[in-house]
Length: 190
Image 1 (cartoon, helix red, strand yellow):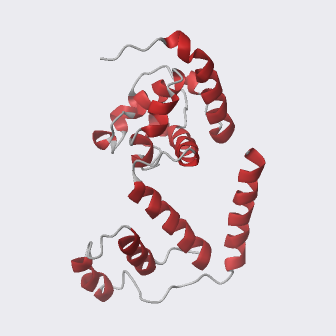
Image 2 (spheres, one colour; image 1 turned 45 degrees about the horizontal axis):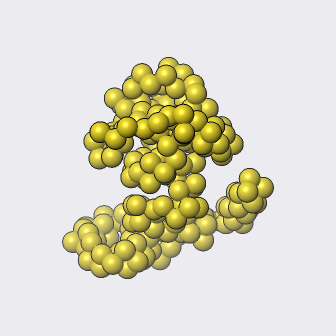
């Protein structure tokens, strides 16, 4: 096990904690490492660091370890951790802030997760809702998994779960204004 000199990470710890708090509103000092978040997390089994450990990395100022880990990309944002936390630490928001920070620094260990998120948001911005068929096609083409889940398509079509043409909402301008507002908020934070 690698030894870490915590006195060298103290300054970076403060900087990282302040950045995360500014982006997410989450103060990681509130976490006292009880582990209830990890115990209830439905995807903790697939993570390289458990949710509790991710918070601890941020608390200790281990920025590279926190931003390069796969766990922040695997978080399902289901908020089970938040519902279980006795200190109301919103771990889903923390994970999102870490993903944004990591993406800004070019650390994207789960490229397909990032691709899916981007394509999903583009579909919602364009149509006002997600167009499942377009999302599946774009994802499979861009992730180079051309026939992924192709055997499921006939049943999804016959059951009416996916449609060839995108269904758009009546007033897509409202959705576009939401996206524009969020983009402007991002510029204000930088």
